[in-house]
Image (cartoon, rainbow, N blue to C red; front, side, top):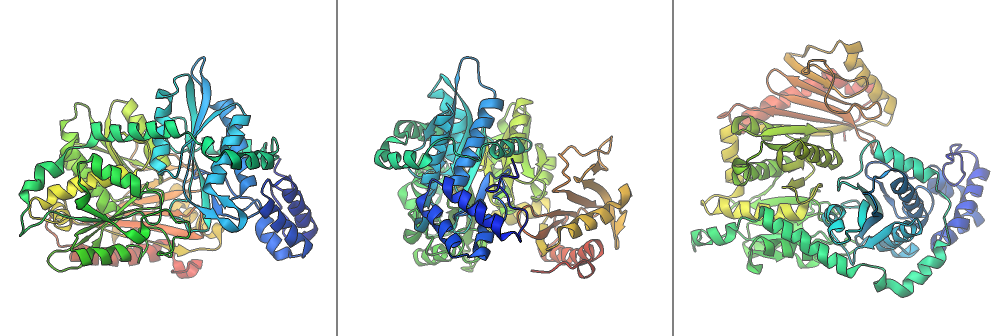
Length: 628
């Protein structure tokens, strides 16, 4: 099937083949605007533009689909979405287990992304998905209105409580999260409520490849849908699922800190106040409900008006990612005007949370890193819930996240489990640990993704917002700010300083060669410069871990995306991997300082070590690695 002309053109110079592939594509594209655009390029013989749209195909992987909204097989459009949906439907019918006598069902949500020029949007993609699923005999619950990603993940696990005759076989959230405004995405959840991971993704991709031709006349069906509109979505189930989601949060996670601590504040030391931004995304109404569920009044927070409502143009931010420099500027200005202390920012689909704080002493801002927020939340979850659990307590974090929470766990008495990068691995590992009898109370990744409790098997920026609100009020009630509290943790457990970065590498074999040289036929290095190595884990194939009895790693290995982890005697951990989506060779290096040693001392030690480690191991100049 991969030889089909509208699926893949491998010979870039064959303009005739490209033109024929473009014509064939246009002939089956259910969107008149994108089809006409392609035919116009053909008529005007714009080979270079055709090549950009047709030389390859959008990849289906563990993130599902994500690309620019545009015609052709490399973009997100009605045809690529229907092809993906047909493949997903076939996979679900063939391979996802269904309880005896029950029927298959899928839940689909969408955000506000849109490209009006081509009549492409997340909502339209969601409708296409519904049409494909129901044609395949899979009942589709299309959530009503713009919804946050965590609600879809929650719904996959709980929709069967509403429709007891059905088994939920998958979920789809049509979102590009914090990507640039021109992008759209198609995020797939497996029947367990976790993001799809290997080998499920490869199985779905294979089914997509066998179902590239539309099963029926989608164009006519979409036209009929325009007249139905409101009847397409499931308003009743959406309301029920929202109530179930917030009820789960309230029963499992709400402590009532605001009511308990509010009497601790006075005119001299006022309660903290929050400026909230949804980054032009879907989060505002759901964040307001989260504040309310956790017992916080409307006076506790102020929403950035210009960023409050969903807007596919994202007019006030160049990049709708709260981690990006400048993304919180507008929120900071409002906080300074109002004398507020904290900023909470969800990304556009509300599955991540960024936090910043203004010092009451100096007026300076601290934007907390994902690792710092993760450490604060993890410690809070242990003190608030873990200590009182009747089961062994565990937490999970991606291997490239800070080791500080793991160190705290060793001292305080909870287990910290490492996973591969990405919440698909974090969520699925947390689920496995629960089945084994552990109480997994928290999980996180350094890219500001947090999962508090077991409400959702994925990252959830709304639950994290509520928990961090309670944490903040508790800290402020002791006449401290969040940054002060974090510093106290550093004083107790030691400063953990990290240096994460990357080199551009436009020749993938170079990265393979570098890692091969470091592997050295299985004779790994014993030192790097003056720094002695304590342990090595290699997640390339065949895999190696010096800390296990059989020297085989417990984490999955991968030939296509290997990761090398080096642990030094001084406690430093250095990790190297190639980016799966960009021409980057990434590194993550963290050095813990003993308790009592000042941060600037640890920073100086790390800076010196980073220079030596990167130069000796990667040899950037020799290997043509380019600094950003």
